[in-house]
Image (cartoon, rainbow, N blue to C red; front, side, top):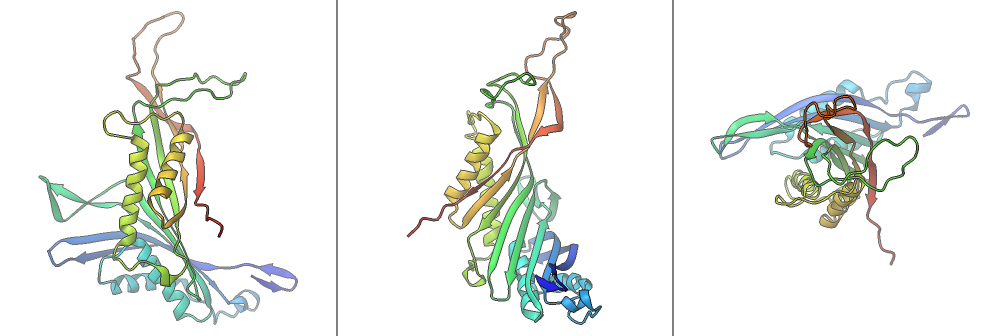
Length: 307
């Protein structure tokens, strides 16, 4: 932040939606593939560009775009979206004197290796659904803030869900039930506890594995055991159990936020007062609808004990 003529100026500039795909070939003949959409924001000491039309301290956004491609080429070994974001952020804060901090956001497309007759294909991939996201912020001192997440994780269970005991007034039409379908599209983001570049784990693909592990915990908690499942008294209760399970399993995650809209499947009913039974349904035909939908969001933080 700078003060100019009695005014406060906060500024950053960057390049958005830089799309890059990287292919690696391993020693066993298998190809590995990643597609990223990269957003870069630089915080820099470039006040003259705003107040005097002097661009001599500006890192051009074209330079940022080309840096993404050049750094992707330098990554000779397969790496996670988090690691690539760290490489970019470190470059901008160390290479340019006037850049005080860099924020790099990456969304990874969910390309998955296909299987043919039970065998993993060497170079064949299909596009999945949910996306892997990350945001990394690095400053000149090496201080780090890193968040990862999932977007578009669609889940549904056909039973073991209900909603009872809520406030009822003259505007309430929703009946109470202990038997309903439950569907949502999970958006999750979690903050890692690593606070400096020097504290990062050295294990290759550490963050890719952690992403897969977190997704597995979220899914296992939502669905419960494959036989019998687990009852959900509300989306709120299930959301809390999912978030709590992640913090309980992974000590390197300091908080997690979950957004879980309640996507509705309404039982079809073709009866009326004049025609009591046109077709008899038994909760086996539904009308899918995602508008309007309920919105449920919560953040769970790990509380640090006081010494």
